[in-house]
Length: 357
Figure 1 (tube, rainbow, N blue to C red):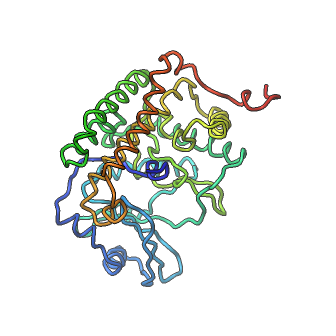
Figure 2 (cartoon, rainbow, N blue to C red):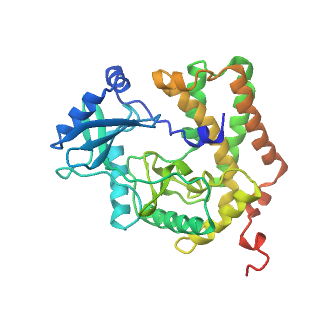
Figure 3 (cartoon, rainbow, N blue to C red):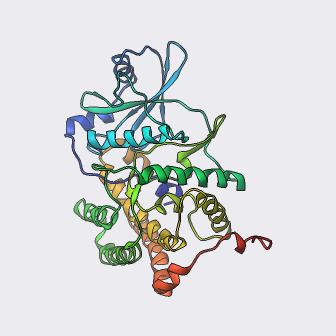
């Protein structure tokens, strides 16, 4: 289990659709995608390519006039219509604020459509590359951008999107793993104990941290750099949560390089929005929650043939041993530090540059 796999997982949500919709989703064909787009009054040329996405089905389509669109078919049962529209409203607010975030296209004032019970939306195709490394200038640009995204988010009021919580990221995945018998009996007690410790630490540290609408899944794969500069994409996991959730995934771990990059990023972030260093105490807690959630995410999706092909060794003994070793290492850090120590631990630019004032 790698960092990339954990960071690219998606949030678990209740099922809303029936099996017929899910079966149609699993077998979506190019002809059906093209027909759905053509029904909106557009003119696809017939050229279509499926893009990399485990959670949804995403396709690049070329139109007769040479433009390219991205058609995103949402996984049935993951989000309700109201939840998707709330995500779209957030993106439209970001675009209104002239921020570099991709928003869906509107056709006849609508941004969400339906084909045989499957919701879908169309997006402009924007060129760009996922960053391998970020220069100091890149970190500053992205820090300012995220702060402004959070400013817009703080002015939004999500009524339908979920809230980041222990129940959502620990309790529900754990219950699902046990219900579907993916959590092997010999690991069950120890795994539950580790999950309980993570949940307790999150509750302790997050009690006074403000929550507001955030991206929710801001790893480097959801940041692109193209001819028009840096921009953020895929707000599919947008929810009400702590700002640090949108930061730790960009700088996972505790290496000096990661901490230095995070410090530069946050200095730029603070030019537009407050960020309390004490919130950084949540970083490793959130990483542990992500690991637990990741297993639940696979378990919930495992009937999807794409998941069975991608994770053939899911939940065998070696899988649980690796996952539990990582959780033990994180939880051992909890035991070695008091709450006050955690809250006060942070590194800034002065820790990395001898002439920084």
